[in-house]
Length: 389
Image 1 (cartoon, rainbow, N blue to C red):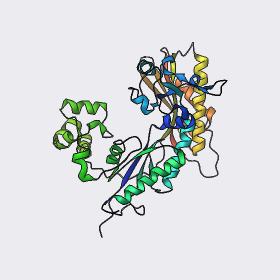
Image 2: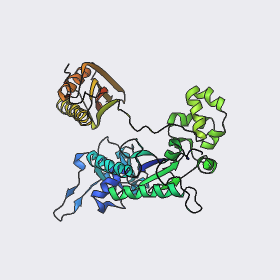
Image 3: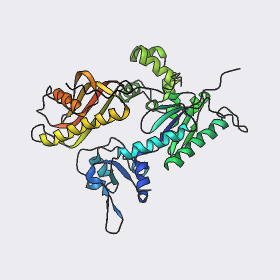
Image 4: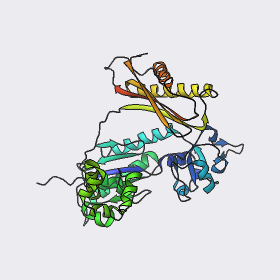
């Protein structure tokens, strides 16, 4: 008896942060909305009981868009775009601050809803997961004349379960592997469902730009374009040996395999984090001396947040590090390894402060971050060690 056909799904929540906010402010549905403001952009309720929202045209600062509704995207706004630039394109767009507590709560709900139907899940972040549907009852069944009818019905059930649990829509791609499923989930957004098997590559995958393959970034994309390779089909037709010669043995071979839709990676269902970090980008550049009070408060807050993350997830860490980005966009990191692992905020703050003393702080700062690495779990029943340096 032949083994069952491999069925891997990629589920991607639609405009996740923005969609979470629309649950809270349904009156904004259909409007261009941008997520990425600070606390001063918090909506205020007026005397008439109606919310008053900040507008992008009134924004001043150095922030970037975290995400945007599809209506805002239609106006040319997208994540990582500077908000001052975005304000020129759509000054009427609503601006909302980021609320990660809300997004994490919605994330937990949608993942639990999926697990009720298909428990083999690889968590890929706050808004996306891979799901192995191969062994889920009914997934391999033919329905009528549709050989994929069983898995199609299962994917729809997953989408409906996510909507019932969260009020949000998601898009799902189902293919034989993770690489193709990641591409497929983007083909019919929002609220899409795309099933695609290997024999459909020439018609549905090869016409797409090479950058649609997860793992081909801007630099590799530009090099491929310089070679006259713009589509996945052109990449698939290019000699493997030449790709290896130009991009190296490992990456060149991977490019050839990826273009042919080959990917045998298993789902990673129980991965341990290698580090935990918190960082913030300032709305204006801060000076280490003149803005010392503000920086010190933010620095301490980041350390406390990392410590809380470690404690909540049951980890301690031995290496404390900092990340600084200056006004010339130069990024500097420094690390310090402690004699004992810790999840204590004061110990992390002390070690991070020692790292900070090893950096020339004559230029203004754009970003500040704190990281704890070399994580481990204390023995059960044992309290987290302080490890103060």
